[in-house]
Amino acid sequence: MNAINVNEFSPEVKTFDGKSVLFVGRFTYRKGIHILLEAFQKVKQKIENAHLMLVGSGYFSSIADLLIRALNLSKNVSIIGQVKKEKLIEIYQNSHVFVLPSLYGESFGIVLLEAMASKTPVIASDSGGTKELIKNEKTGFIVKKGDAEELSEKIVELLLDQNLSKKISTAAFREVKKYDWKNIAKKIEAVYRW
Picture 1 (cartoon, rainbow, N blue to C red):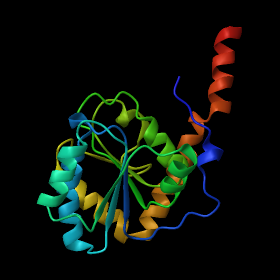
Picture 2 (picture 1 turned 180 degrees about the vertical axis):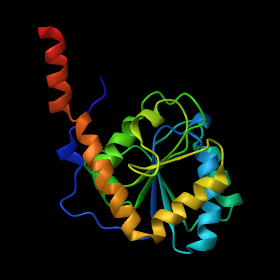
Picture 3 (picture 1 turned 90 degrees about the vertical axis):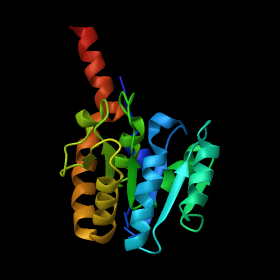
């Protein structure tokens, strides 16, 4: 069972800065970081001060570095390695948009729950289990995997529209409570009692 402690991630007040985008995960080809960087180049053309933070590590790090330079994104993208949980929670809470652009092999995506619990609107590709977690245009956005154009449009839409961001954030936060450990534990207990 996948679950998180929602209260641990939940900010007292959520603010949307109109510029910060976040990715958290392993740096591998299947996570679609190259698609996100391509999309972010388009985002930068519309929102000059937009900033993407990539949190994690893996063999794709050096390729990501090369792409950042090749796409002229050095001022707009930061790569941060593994961080302690407290710092990660702070990063989630301070981000305007969370993106999971996976190409395949995304079974559940615990990072989506973490972002939703942080009241950060999510955009994920239609890969694997993401469609079970996100109700498109209600609790987040689902985009076609590998489609940098659509991904950039959704990022820009959320960054520019505070009301939409708040609406999605509120709906997602309500939804993520189903995955709180307290609720999951009750379900597991019920199964064993049966």
